[in-house]
Length: 363
Image (cartoon, rainbow, N blue to C red; front, side):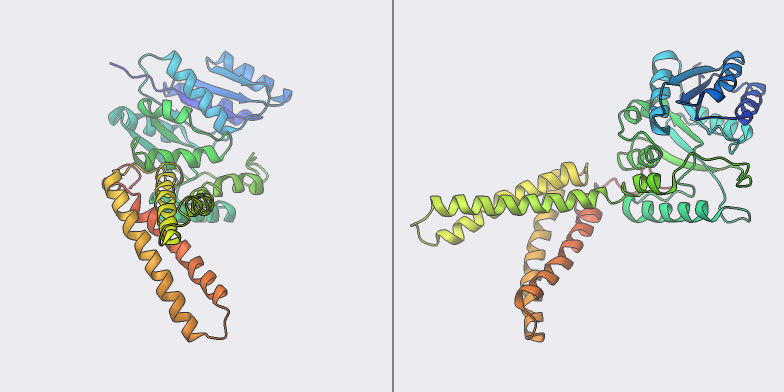
């Protein structure tokens, strides 16, 4: 029966804690152990040498590439090396993940090899650094509101990942800490696997004893820009649709010049084509939807009509109520609000497949 579940540990300038973890894992027969030396300094060479002597596989990056790159290389190695692979366990090298919790993740994966398990720490207790508690709460809030994924510990490095989804994870962009966040998003939104958290010990040492390679500003920007990537793409999609609409109007108005109501005809033709373009870009690129086109297209059409009517009525009404305000300013304010509303409605209702609820990502 297939039962190989490698333990993957990315490591950058590790200390003796890594060797202690390896010894504890071997005592519980949690092997094979894959260590990724992610461009560590020469001072760490004895640590990796001892890890190799203890039977660990050492993958080496000549230069630091990031935790995401380390995980992807290890995933690829495991797929190519172990024909009876069930999945993998990822853990950190700094002692934050206890061997018992790693073993618990392995047992869960063996029992349910199609599920991704996330070790979840308790951030409500005393002794948790403020930045860790705040960072997790913020990321959890954004995941729930934007991606509809509610996970207690969004930043956990202890993950039991089934073999079936590893090829998809290898292809994910991102080489540093943002990769782990994108992993959760991709697994949940593309229904690659059900995500289940399980409780693990919360281990935090003193600031002087605990070294982290997380860069608060740079890595936080990398992580949080993932949440707003779709809105950025939505802005670009809308702008390109507007440009296309104007160009098409210019072409059609020239081609139809001389015909009755040619301005109205040019406007309608340009809007039909630009709207079809906008729908397709939003479907495929902005929201990466898996909904059926009939359902999504129908809802998009209804929304477009509703937005058009709302823009006309609200602009007219506010112009009457605020006659001193320039009409163009009123129009810009109305359409700005409707633009945001349109994004939220499209994200939550138009491009959501019927099987979105209840699948991978709910916990």
